[in-house]
Structures are given as C-alpha cells and as structure tokens.
Length: 312
Length: 320
Image (tube, rainbow over all chains, first blue to last red; front, side):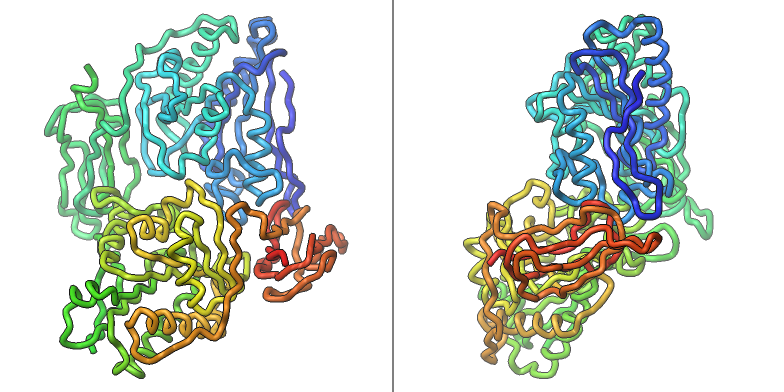
C-alpha cells in the first residue's frame, strides 16, 4: 500500500487541504474507487476505509494481480467533513458539480481537476454516491445512460439492483458522467445510508466491490457471490408523495417488499397529533427509497417503489 | 390602475406556515390581461432566486413607486416578483435552505415533482404570456459587478438588441453550457419568452445608484414595448462583448489562500501589469501574492469578500 497526496491546497488558518489516495499493486490503472465528495458522506468514507483495510491484507498476501493497480480515495473533501458542512466551506459549491474541472479556475474547479487528472485513466471507476434527499436506499449500482454504459459489467457487483437513469443537465458535471465520457466504465454505488454508518450495508458494498474486482481479474479473491442483479430504469420507479406536510413516521424500510394498499408512512399534525395522511403503496413492489427525517414537506416523494411487474 | 398583490404558488409547510410566492401586478383599468398579452405588453421583473442577492429588492420597490407616481402612463402589464426564494431571503442563504438546492438549477420545474420543483413549475406557468422578463441577480456575496446583462450565445440574436437598450454598462454574450439549461432564464428563453439576466452590485447589500440605473433601464424597455407611454431613453450605451469563445475576458484567480485587499474598484480602466490587489497573511504580516492585470482593459468585477482560497476569483477584466 502506498499512501499519497492526490491534491492539496495551502490554507491560511487551517491545516492544508489534502486529498489522500491509497494505491495497491503496480501496473496498468485498473480500478479507481472514490468515496465522499461531500462533507456529509460518512458512510461513503467508511466503506472506503474497510476496502483499504481489506486491500492492504490482500496485497500483503500477493493477491493483487500482477500488472494491475487499484487507487482508493476515501474522501475528496475533508475540510467540509471536519466542519460538518455538505458543500465547499467558503462558497458552498459542490465538487461533484465541477468535473472534469479546470486547473486555472475557481477552487472547487481546481480540486475537481486535481482529482480527475489522477483518476481518468482507470479502466473502471466506482464512486460511492449520495442522494440530495434525506433517506435510505436499497443497495444499487446506478448508471447514467450516456450511450457508454455497460449493464453486463454493472451486474458483476452482485448488488440487488442495477438502476439506469437519463442524465439531467447538472449530471454532466459529475464525476460519474465525465468518467464515462473519458471512456472509463463508471458506476455509482448507493448503499443504504449517507450521514450515518450502516455496517451491514457497508459490508455488502465492500463484498460487491471485491467481487467485481475479482471477476475483472484485478484481485485474487473468492467471496460472497451476491445477488443476480435486476436491471431497472429509474423512470419506472413509482414516486409516492405526501399530500400534506407534518411529522413523518416511517412504516416501511428500504429494501422491504410491500403490497398494494399497505401503509408506508403516516403524516401527523405536529400540534394536535391528528393523522393528516396515511401514505399507502399505490402498487405492490420493493421500496427503493424511503425518506427518514422527522419532518416531511408537502408533495415530497417520500418513497420510491420498484413495481412488482418490473421485478419479474 | 389595477395595483394588486397575487399569490403565484404556495405549499403547506410542516409547522403552522404556508410557503407563498408573491407578485405585484400593475395594469391599466378596463383592459383584459389577455388583450394586453396579445398586444405583447407584459413585462416581468423577477428577483430573489438567490436569497442573499438583494440588489433587486430596491429595483422592485422603486419601480412600483415610480409607476404609481405617473400611473397615467401605464399602457401594459407590469408584474414584479420580488422574492422567488423567500426561505433564502429570510435565512441569508443563496440556495433554498433545508434542501441546500440552488433554485436556479431547478427550472422548468415539475408540476408533479417535489415542493421546490412544483413551485418552479408554477412560476413558469405564471410567466406564460410575458413579453419580456428581467431576472435580476447581484453576483454573489464574494464579487461586486458593474451593471451588466449576460446572454447565452444560443439566444443572442433576439436578446442582444433588447439588452443594448436596457441602460447597463456591459452586455456579455457567453458560451453555452449544459449546466445552465436548468436556469430560470434559459428555461424561459427556450420557450420563446425573452429573458435578460441582470448582474449588478454585490450580495447582501443594496447599491442604490445601480438600482436607479436599472429602473431607468426598465422604463426605457417599457417605453420601447409600449407598456409605458412616456418616452424614456437609456442614458448609457453598453459595451457589447461577444465572448462566446471565452477570449474577451481575463479571469483573475488568487494564486494562494489568504486575505485579499483590493487596490482598484470595479468600473476602472487598468493597464497591463497594474496592481489590482494583494493577498496577505495577517498571521505572519506578509504579502503572499500580488494580483496584476494580465493586459489592458476594463475591470468590471472585483472581489469584495476578503477571504480567498487558492483559485478564488478576485476580478474580471474585459480586454480592450
């Protein structure tokens, strides 16, 4: 294992801003894994830390395949993590809206460029991503439909779902999109949580990545095979929305199978405890996403369901 | 004259509150809105998409005051939307607090979408029938800008002739960018509603002089469109920069992190090599870096917020 500084900026009153990478093996750039790009992505850092620990052991046993190199960057934004801020400290910009970056541009453009220069030549790029809405996901590999996506490869992670979605204008500045444009096979992995550590889901993600690397001939490893992934398009997810705002009580969890008409959550009046809405499953299916905050706003998609017919 | 406040969009909030987006409509008596819209006589003044950009607040107030003062001149509809992002204004926040979303990346919105997407879609619906819209921004809290209009190259043929009559100092035509396709202005322009993006002054402050200049510009545009009967001519002839290739402007970025002290103010002409500002280290008492003009030009942007990271933008110079 070789620890190295991927990118750094000298600061005025704080320790230098450093993005640290861990390299395993020698040779052609095979797999690059990026953890948190935002300050609240603790689970993403945690999974990377487990991966680094495992890869270190595998390397010591000579089980990184000859001629293959792996890079893990657990966190691209320690400044924001340490001050508990989601985006960049001074100007609140999002590093994951700055790719491929610009070396002469503004600070987060430079950071994105600094990262991208080090990760763009890998054959496979894996990022642990998070969603802007607060909630839990069923573990999934997510890919943007750029025309360069490789679904069969995505299935090799053995996660329950491979989700395809059409890029929106802002997606074109994400790491995943730019990786694909630069001919890296890129995957975003969503584990169950973001701001809190979920050990089971982290273990599943770790297994998924190790399995993938083994199948692609980067490491010598035999682990848990995982699932036969089901491929779904995000546009086929059924959004289940609140019709009222209020306190939110979750009754069904991410990954759970629910029947049509089943109560997923309850919205109650914060002053009178009166039930304002029983949120019911409009179809039978699997919970792909479940809101997990105390407050819910009106018209918010608090659940996303993968309908049963798409399950077959 | 009709002079009324309307609710454009609303949503229930969790605890004892409604989110409401207001507009102020001025309209001559005894004329239907449909008739005025058919005659292309409706202007919309929009501001507050970024909650910490307040320059447009004075423009909204002053425009309303001047319309009331000479209401006999009103011949069309004037819709004033002072607070597109009321949460942001209340929280001194650029984006939408609680969601950490930039409202200017949500358009055209989605009527069946989440609360913020729904609000954006309702605003878009309300803009239907508008002849000309001005979306007034104030740069951000970091930079002060000379009054200017920014135009995406895709819409320049229609918008530049209008912008040149709007009494600003600069009309800056910039290259297209996919990311900008989710802005309010792009969404309107791509639906055939001419929309000018105004940038002036600085975040969290009001520069009355710029506000007055902009209100004069709005009256000039209203006069041109037949919304205002009195003849109002712009007093400024803007510089036009056709910068689609990104070659008309020098960008000055801080070479090091530190405290930026400006030596020049925006709106000044500068020579090549002239000192624009310095980056200092107050702990050590040192100058860390000198920011000099890479060429001769007009300094139309200067950094106002002193703390800089390596790469922070400290100024822009239009090449002469």
